[in-house]
Structure formats: structure tokens, C-alpha cells
Image 1 (cartoon, rainbow, N blue to C red):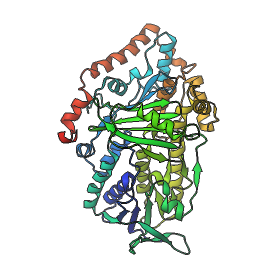
Image 2: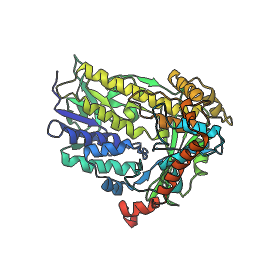
Image 3: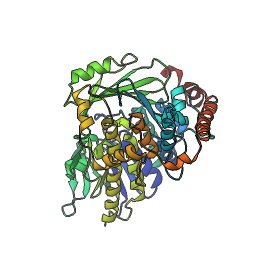
Image 4: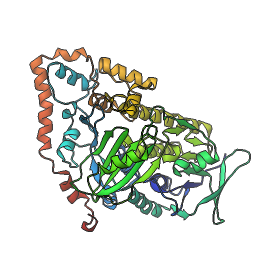
Length: 496
């Protein structure tokens, strides 16, 4: 087996520089890290919303939060506001915090279902501190109770920040394009990259961050792709940046339209926008018109078309190459999972890193975990489309009535009948998230855990009221979101 001493990352952007930062930090002095990228090759660069797992990753590799936020024009994120998904005119927030309290026989949706049966019309989200803070436009980093949060940031600036973080760790950036990939004749392992300027870059282990192209994982190693478009038919997006017109919300907005949906991501100095749609049901003209008529501010850039195919590589790790980011597959950013899947892939790789050489057992375990993670996130995203009552277009009729994976069908039926959600131990989205989306889109449990009826009606009503009062009391203590940003991580005024 080839001892791993030289890691070569092909492609920059968020995925490439996250890989450089993580491997450079954790395996500093054990392996050399070279990142090859070309200024002439652009990146997709629209993954500007994250989920709370990002905080733990930053702590792992030592990224200081305030510095990162100032450098990337970042704001805080408490969840995602979904508009028009269950039915036109409805909205809910999938918040990052815990709704109510977990008990031994289930989660808080059982308490909420009993309250609803008693005539209480309080929304499910009202029992979540993060949900109420997002609605009220408030935020603070506090300990009791703590807010569970993530970030919105400028993806291009984030990649630049990661480069400035990585290079002092010994990571070497090399400018250039790959002209030809050389493989070992016997094993098929990648050995050298021949660049367009005649230089040769050798490595023992390669990380493919070349985007949808998959230069190493697909064009070279012929790994294959598992297509999920029959469940997730959106295949195109238009992205544009606009002027900031109002205080930044502490949540991402996702608004469903006739043939897809629109995102809105507020930064300190601008707003990121885009419309995701299915070219099977709508054309570019519809997308341009829908995007232009639903923007809050004037455009700073021309709309940019991004085309994609939802699915995953059949192997995330093939021979001596691991694919990260878009090179490993694509799930549309409905739940802001794109960057998370890069960091989770990196954590997986760091745990299984083949310092003593690539061993089949490590490869198999990496691919098993990657497959299970991607499939569980896939099901959660499909849920948003399938759990709808919309029938105003051919697109919504298709996703509402399409056959879904058995794993998702069973979970929806279980929740609808009993309020229960049973999960695997490593799934990203826990019961709390599933319940928020299911209830938010109109699926209410027909029954609940009967043990909850052991509490007398008056006692139960006071118990539920106590949750709401506790949240309201703590909400009053929070500053406005932009006020907190101004004293914590504000960028220079000339950027605003």
C-alpha cells in the first residue's frame, strides 16, 4: 500500500478550501496539501446559507467566528421560512431549535396534538424559542436559554477567507488547469496531473472539488451517477444579487411558485436571490419573469443560469480519490445542506484518513455512511414537495402524486397515523425537524401517545401555557438581529 504523504485537492471554491483548511489543520506536519485551481474557472458560489453543524466544524479547525463573519458579510440564521409550500398563502418556519420538550415516549408533537384536540389553535412553532426569535427579528448569543443558529455569508468571500486561514498552515495553492490525468496501469489509482502549462503535479491521495464536472471522480474514474430527478425534478436555477432594502432577517426565505421556488438570503451588505425550477414544466422565460417580479431591491448582477441533475455519485470514495461538494452529487439547497455535506464528508474522511495507505475497509465504510446520509437528506427534501395540497400547476400535481421512496412513504404514514417518527442514529434531520415540516405543510397526527392524557385538562393547559410564557419572557430580553450584528461582527460602513 502507498503511504499517504501528499494530498492534492483539485478545485477551489467553498468545497476545495474547506478541505484544505481541515486537512491542513488536523494533519499538519503529517501530509503536504496542495490545492490546484484556476482563476479562469468560475465556481457556482451560491451556497450562502448554512445549518448549525457549521459551528462545530469551525470550532474543530479553529476558525474564529467574529473574524469569519466580518470577512464574509455574514448574518445569523435561526431557520428557514417556507411560504406557499403546503398551500398558497400559508407559511411556517423550520427553526433550528427544539420545539417544546422531549419525553420518554415521544416528542412534543404529541403534546401539541392533544392541545389541538382540546381546541387550542397555537401554531406548533410557537413552542420553539428560535422560531419566535426569527419571527420577531431578534437574536443574541446567549447561554440560558441558548439560541441554536447558523450563518448566511458571501460564498466567494468565504472561500477567500478559508484560503487566508489555510496557507499559514502550510497549504500550497497552485494556479493551473488539468490537461491530462495519469493513472497507475495496474491499480487504476491516480498518480499525476499534467497541467496545461506543462507542469506535473504528483500526489498520493486526491480530492475532487471540480464541481458538477467531476474531473477526477467521473471523467477519470468513471464512477457513475445515481439520478434522483424522478423524485426531485427541479434541474435549473437563476441566481442574482440585489441591493439591501431592509434589515436582515435572521432566517432564509423559501417561497414556492408555480413551477419551483425562490430563495432569499440576507447578508449585511446585500441580498442573495435565486429561483429554482424544473425545465420539464417551465422555461427560462418563466424563470426570468418570476425572479424579476419577486425581488426586493435592484439587481447588482445579471441573473446567472445554473443547471444541475439531482443525485449522487455511486461512490464518494473511489480508489485514491474522494469527491466533495458538487463533484460528489447534488441535492437542491432547499434545506441549506450543500455546505454541510462538504463538512460531513470531511469529518468522515478525517476519521478514516488512510495515512498508511488506502484500504478497502475504509473505502467501504466511507461510502456506506455517505450513501445513508445522502438518502436521508434526499427523503427530507422530497417531503417538502410531496406533502403539499397545491394543485395549481402541472408541476405541483406531479410532485404531490408521484411515488416516493419507501423509506419516506413509511415515515409519512407513521407520523400521520400516530405522531411518531423513528430515525436512524446518524440522520441529519431529527424528529424535531421532521415534525416541523410535516405539521407546517398540513399533516397533523390523527392520534398521539395516550400517556399524555394522564394529565388533567386544566393542568395540561397550564403546562402548555407555561412553555409559551417562558419563551415570551426570554424573547423580551433579546436585541434586534441587526443591533446584535452591529456590536458583534459589523463590516465596515463603506461596504454597506
